[in-house]
Image 1: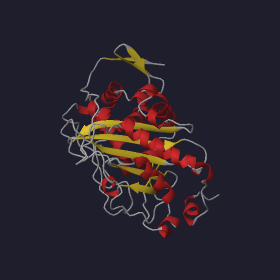
Image 2: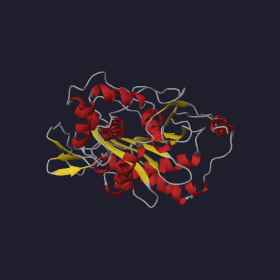
Image 3: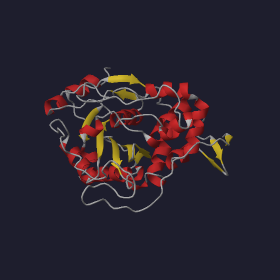
Image 4: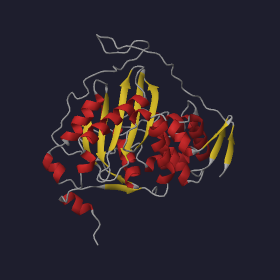
Length: 352
């Protein structure tokens, strides 16, 4: 086990904790120059003809009145099972906030900047990767970014799908963005702790979470528009990521986020792995949670993005994801769901 002393510091965005109520007229949260409503009809304009309606119902009910999006994916195929608030999900993206730390952790492990048990000395404490992911420690990941350097991390980020469309021929989808140089505000440390100057789409995060859940296959996200398309969907691999040996190094921290960290509102009997993100962009608070259920049977990836006023945060997004998983568990979805021998699964299965 190695211990590394860290003395460098990076700017940290802090948000004061207060209680604010939504305006009954506009839905905009009082208390700041917030330009995005916190509460809205997030289903308006959605096309659901090709969706799994049981998944859709659980996602819509869990999101409730919040202005946001939930994207649910089958990580074994890349099929988008439901996309609540398609206009938001297919937009050009938002700052990933602390969800970028999953990519940073994978890059740092791949480059042997750290081992899973390496402890960095941050002030008077020594913390390892599991704790840093679970508690979303900004200094830890800023330090990893400085050790990796911009070029090395940029290479991994592009491998993981940043800056490109995640979907395959999804009408209206726009790509996210990854900067060509370190951010002017805080450099690579802010890039790797807060996602400064990165634009991430919910589909991009869902694709990466799917690769972590399935062992390293980055699928094209496919969104069938009819039930016939869904039945005959053939999985398409974008590329294989060499992360299978690295995943055991990050899963304890992603599980820890739910068990005792920033995503504790998602905690329940069945295990969930995930990462929260909270920051402010363009006078709107953002709350992210990228996750997958870590149980036998059928895995699902669920990404929640919230945008609005001060109550919006990663822990709130985690609570919504937890409610989504709970609703499906109550209906025995995971116990009953089994892969069916459709043409898609037959074609995607290895031949022996």
